[in-house]
Image (cartoon, rainbow, N blue to C red; front, side, top):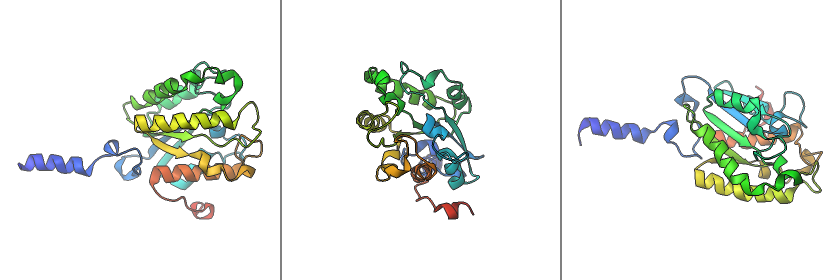
Length: 233
C-alpha cells in the first residue's frame, strides 16, 4: 500500500466527531472551542417546576464544565406538531437555535402533544419530528442529534397531558432514533420510579431536573454523572 493511501486510511480510522456513531461519547478535544449544545423543548426544558437557574440544561452545564456551552431554547407550552395549539416551529427560540449552529442538539418535545386538542394530529408526529431533526442535521456545523423519551406523567396527569399518549410517543421516538441513527436519552426512565419528583404530575422539581441532567450527561459523555456535591467543586 502506498504511504499516502495508508495515511488516509489511518486518518479515517482515527475518525472525527462527525464520523462517530450516535451513541459514541462526544470529545471536547475534537473542537477548537467549547462544544455548543442546544437544548430544544417545552416548559420542562425551560425549567418550569424547578428552582430559578436549576433547569435541566443549567444543571447539565454544571456537570459538563467549561469545555461545553449549553444553551436553553426551551419554551413553555410548545408542541412538536406543526398543527398543535402552540407549535415550536413558529417561535424565535427555534430560529435562534438554528442560527447558533450547534455541535450537538437535544430535542425533548411531545409532552404537550399528548393533550386532546393536539392528539387529533397524532398521525403527523413522526413526519414533523423527522423534519425537525433534518433542519438541524443540514446545518453547516453538522451537529450530533439526540432525541428524548419524554418524562413520565404520573396518573392522573395534568393540563390534559397523559401517560397513555406519552407511551405511544415513546414507541415512535424509539423507532425514529433507530431509523435516523440518532442518539437517544431516556428521560422517562430517569424519573419513572420517582413520581414525587414531579409534584404537579408533569414538571420535574429541582431534584428531578438534576436526574434529567444526569441522564443527558451520560448519553453525551459515556460517563456516569458525578454527584451534585462533586460537580459543584
